[in-house]
Length: 125
Image 1 (cartoon, helix red, strand yellow):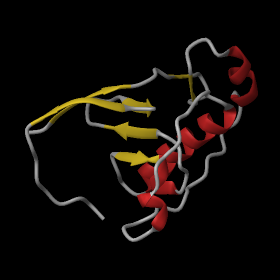
Image 2 (cartoon, one colour; image 1 turned 180 degrees about the vertical axis):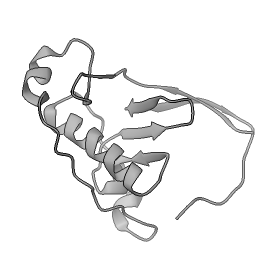
Image 3 (cartoon, helix red, strand yellow; image 1 turned 90 degrees about the horizontal axis):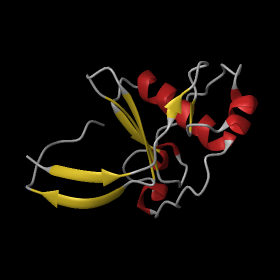
């Protein structure tokens, strides 16, 4: 079993179902009421963008919250449990995850701070 400890920023889901930083009233006013999300094209093995380094997210802007919401929508459309922004062609350090515990997770600028063990297996395609 492989254990990975990750450090990231915290986001909350607002009443309209959008993700944002706690207390970001300015962004809340801009995005509340929007319900349109987009299904994005998923990049697959061999796509050059998957080999490039992603940029740090310095601020949670309306564009980042739109990306996060689109990523969840795309992930669900493909019956996935996790998706990185680079997999939809955006070179930002953002990851969305939905696991069986009933929670959705958004990782912003995740950093692997410790690993142990190993795991081998096939990745879904």
